[in-house]
Image (cartoon, rainbow, N blue to C red; front, top):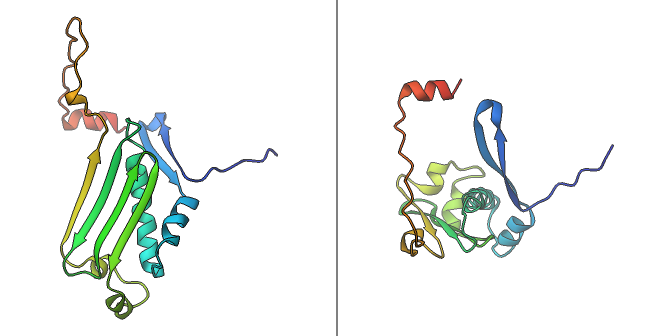
Length: 162
């Protein structure tokens, strides 16, 4: 049987044509280990940071521009965690969580997301691209015809999902 090599620190696109389904899958190892090694987080916070880094890597892998950047940020006022920030820039990941260690110890070994973040979360995803297409000079020559937009209704969605 041939030996299969599993790559780590990759995000790949997947497709199931018979189901009209597409998605992305990420396998991160050394990158997450390196980010977590820079901070001495408790296991609950490490797990949350790892999940946030995977989400950020998946979103960042969708960028078309090589120098693109995505920042995922969540802030709270009443939670154990008051700031979570993950950043993807040109294929590199970094992250940080600011939390209250005393309140985390009082919450027990497996606190809920509600306990970690409190009742109000402000989440932001920032998308920065090196060169915005809107500011590029259009090429000289005849104008291109724009593709017409397609209005979907439930009838179209039902047929596509069969």
